[in-house]
Amino acid sequence: MIAWRSLPLLALVAAACLAATPAPPKISHVTIVMMENRNYPLVVGSADAPYFNQTLVAQGALLTNMHAIGHPSEPNYLALFSGSTHGVTDDSCPHTYATPNLASELADAGLTFGGYAESMPSAGYQGCRGSENLYARKHVPWPNFSNVPASESSIYTGMPSPMPSLTWIVPNMCHDMHDCSTRTGDEWLAKNLPPIVAWNAKNDGLLIVTWDEADPDPDGSNRIPTVLVGPMVRPGTSAANVNLYNLTRTIEWAFGLPCIADECKTPPLAGVWK
Image (cartoon, rainbow, N blue to C red; front, side, top):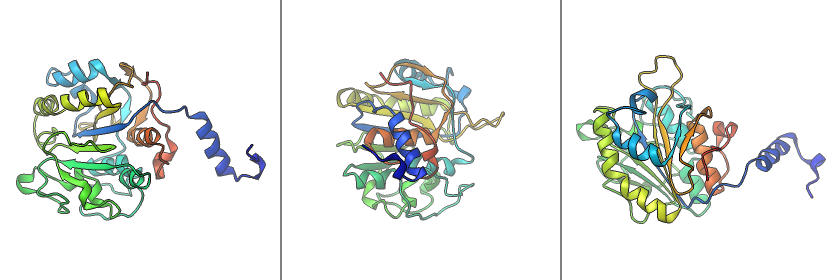
């Protein structure tokens, strides 16, 4: 029995939160695919995104009240990867941090991380830009952290084998919709995601497809499309008011990891699991 009166207030609050959080569903692997610069109505229900709407949304959980953390791109990538924007309010490069993040947490727990960026000039690349402006470090958060080995940063050429515990895939600046059309990005998703979805179905894997920010953001809500697909997901919609920090917390919850920085204020996603 815990001697509650002997615990500091913060410890009591943490213990209460843990007690109130249900056990996660069975999730052995998580894959994140992060797209670019679309607000919710530009993708959800759009004729230019048939794969997203007719396949992913049809079999997954669509978060209808999901929000990014800020503007422009980089703060959102940092937030999802490390639970904090680190005070970044632009797309400046380079940055170097040694603070906890999803990759370092997984390593501490004996699990694996793989960051895959399409059109990155070379594995472990630390530069801010690639040739033809198809790669940008502002969209790739892990090179900013000294506690993430360069060996965990790879060029994306297709579904990894073996799949790490957490796989983060960054399409290039055209395929993520940043510099090209919604249709182009949706066609990239249709080409690259089916083998991951099929593998997940047999291996308790969760796929998260989200966007970095709402652009345009006419009402300032920063509402972005996000869908979760996997054998543990209950198909349908969730109108819960959530943001990218809730995704970070959900990944940690799935793997039994502690929270980091600002995302400690948010709970894991609820109401989307079987």
